[in-house]
Amino acid sequence: MNNYFVFFILIFLSYFLLHHSIAATNLHKNKQLTSDFLPEPPTSFNYTSPPTEYFEVTAPIELPKTKPCSQHILHHDFGFTYGHPPVLANYTPPSHCPSHIFSKIVLEWKATCKGRQFDRIFGVWLGGVELLRSCTAEPRPTGIVWTVQKDVTRYHSLFSSPQTLAVFLGNIVDQNYTGVYHVDVTIRFYPSNGDAPKSKVGALAFGGGVPADLVLPISKNLPPNDGLWFRIENSTDEGVKEFQVPQNAYRAVLEVYVSFHERDEFWYTNPPDEYLVANNFSDVPLRGSFREVVVAIDGNVVGAVWPFTVIYTGGFNSLLWKSISGIGSFDLPSYDIEVTPFLGTLLDGKTHLVGFSVTNALNVWFINANLHLWLDGKSIKTEGRLVDLVDKPLAVSTVSDFEGVDGSFWTSSKRSIFSSGWIRSSYGNITTSFVQDFAYNNSMVIRENGPQQIMNQTILYNGSVHANLPSPFVDDTYRNFSLYMDRYMVDKDVNTSLDVSNITLGFDENKSRSSAFGVSNGALKNVQLAKAVTVIKEKLVDGGFGKTQQDYSYTIDGYCYSRKVGSISNDTILYDKVSYSCN
Ligand SMILES: *[C@@H]1O[C@H](CO)[C@@H](O)[C@H](O)[C@H]1NC(C)=O
Ligand SMILES: *[C@@H]1O[C@H](CO)[C@@H](O)[C@H](O)[C@H]1NC(C)=O
Ligand SMILES: *[C@@H]1O[C@H](CO)[C@@H](O)[C@H](O)[C@H]1NC(C)=O
Ligand SMILES: *[C@@H]1O[C@H](CO)[C@@H](O)[C@H](O)[C@H]1NC(C)=O
Ligand SMILES: *[C@@H]1O[C@H](CO)[C@@H](O)[C@H](O)[C@H]1NC(C)=O
Ligand SMILES: *[C@@H]1O[C@H](CO)[C@@H](O)[C@H](O)[C@H]1NC(C)=O
Ligand SMILES: *[C@@H]1O[C@H](CO)[C@@H](O)[C@H](O)[C@H]1NC(C)=O
Ligand SMILES: *[C@@H]1O[C@H](CO)[C@@H](O)[C@H](O)[C@H]1NC(C)=O
Ligand SMILES: *[C@@H]1O[C@H](CO)[C@@H](O)[C@H](O)[C@H]1NC(C)=O
Ligand SMILES: *[C@@H]1O[C@H](CO)[C@@H](O)[C@H](O)[C@H]1NC(C)=O
Ligand SMILES: *[C@@H]1O[C@H](CO)[C@@H](O)[C@H](O)[C@H]1NC(C)=O
Ligand SMILES: *[C@@H]1O[C@H](CO)[C@@H](O)[C@H](O)[C@H]1NC(C)=O
Image 1 (tube, protein in one colour):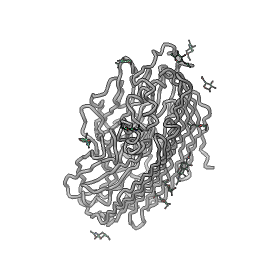
Image 2: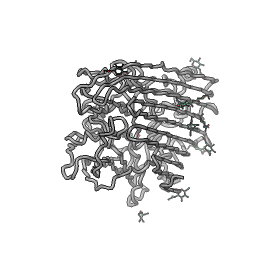
Image 3: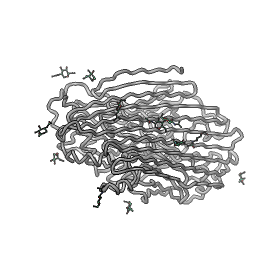
Image 4: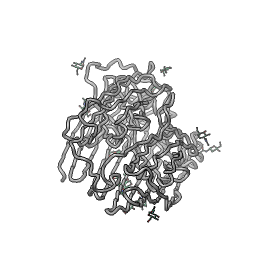
């Protein structure tokens, strides 16, 4: 068998064994593998072959026809960076640009790496405001390259003054893990082609497509040795931040960034604790398979996030994610919570407190947020009041049926949060309401006396913002996050076993918005089917094969983009069909 495969699988497995604790399947089988084996030195690689390009499938960013002004902000080689401060760079607004109003701003992260390395999580912050949460691709000895382009136009106001850019990417380089990440960060500014904002029509914040006037960081002040995220380590832990809102704000949206790691990287595969206790598994608690991020302001729950199950580039089996990376892994989704109903309580010029917590959390979750604020240019003081807040308590139910290590588990939960409040500004007295509705099912089966785990999870979300303007503003988001996983570890003979993983990961989203500025409808259907087989011989990985297929289809207001692509873990793209047709 090709050493090529052996090498990469080892990287994943050793990481897995050292850093993860997941379901019984693995608790059970890990015992057969030594906990700290090491990849063979990669002597047989052809170092002159070109680097492999990895990618996450997304629709291209729609760009205006204007010529962009590019600004290279940072070059850095991330070697041994654990325990070190974030890497900083000075940002100054582009002076060579003909205009300072941009209709599009694009952040580009470009990186290469060669050698052995794990999937590393990183964040990019500008003035403490997070622009990108992402995961590195795992390198090959012959090198890899990947690029992430993100539309950061919603942070427009930040770019008009000098700021500090901070990047934290915690990496380890030693004799065993040799991959250094060589990174370039560039920002491209596309000047507006003269279309003035349609300010005559109404309150721009509601449907005008105009970015916030101010974006406040809800993150840690530059920490000496970590990212700017809050680390949430257990279910009672809370990340808190004081903030102050200008007294003429009339709309506020809190954008939350979330990622889960170490003991909670695969939270959705955790069986209930009663099962672990009954089977004398020492690794308790795992707290079952349900997690919820709760956001509170001054002690009031303002909203929740039931996160998408992002699988990082080494997740379960790194052969699943070559060259196509998992949905969201290169650009983790952020989640918007409308806090306008609460704005009335924040306009007193005093400091207030926002807090993040995670139900059932195990060590560790990285969470922080950005507060997008729209200000009333025609007044120095707006006023308002929270009128209604209904936070229906979380309902989680679990049904377990097991005998020994085999069993089935069903976990289901629902949650609904409603808020409404008015704000009086020069645009009038606007009542805004926000409702979030969540539903979750997780079914899990463990069988064959332990080594097979099948998990099927669905998270449904409805989020809706209404504002009673003369021409009503309605903004609806519907999401369906699904994950099906079948993982089987089977002994072939006394010295050889197979790890077989099948995964179906889906991210569907529909958005619709109507206001005085018009109507907009968007839909995304994005699903990945990935399979990988790993051969483990005499406690070492001895081969493997992975295949990934993705079906992506995105449409917004008559624009359509779809891509069907398949790849094999030996760098082969099986097919790649892109279409802009709406049929
Ligand atoms: C290594 O790869 C390069 C580029 O693909 C190729 O030209 C060369 O023949 C390869 N060398 C060996 C020893 O396989
Ligand atoms: C590299 O791996 C070997 C074998 O597991 C181990 O003995 C050694 O301590 C490791 N080196 C470092 C720097 O971790
Ligand atoms: C939860 O985590 C925090 C932060 O590390 C720690 O101070 C606290 O003792 C932990 N609580 C429990 C119950 O483990
Ligand atoms: C768990 O441990 C207890 C006490 O040592 C023992 O009586 C019981 O049989 C064990 N159960 C299993 C499933 O191994
Ligand atoms: C704004 O409208 C709400 C709901 O109609 C009303 O209760 C409130 O008194 C109004 N506020 C002002 C300042 O007029
Ligand atoms: C979302 O709304 C749809 C349509 O009203 C409804 O059928 C569905 O049950 C809702 N889902 C959730 C999670 O509330
Ligand atoms: C959960 O399962 C129940 C029963 O099959 C079903 O009615 C409900 O729609 C499911 N909810 C989700 C989020 O899949
Ligand atoms: C997983 O559950 C969903 C929703 O209940 C269902 O539609 C789907 O068929 C299930 N997938 C598998 C592979 O069983
Ligand atoms: C959510 O998506 C999964 C996977 O595509 C599908 O099986 C399920 O039926 C969907 N659920 C709803 C309520 O649309
Ligand atoms: C994975 O999928 C293949 C093909 O659909 C199927 O034959 C196999 O049984 C599945 N294996 C697991 C562990 O789910
Ligand atoms: C298993 O490994 C042992 C030790 O290397 C060897 O003696 C034995 O022949 C192997 N058995 C099989 C079935 O490969
Ligand atoms: C990759 O694997 C496929 C399927 O086994 C094989 O057909 C193809 O030749 C391999 N490509 C390379 C470059 O090894």
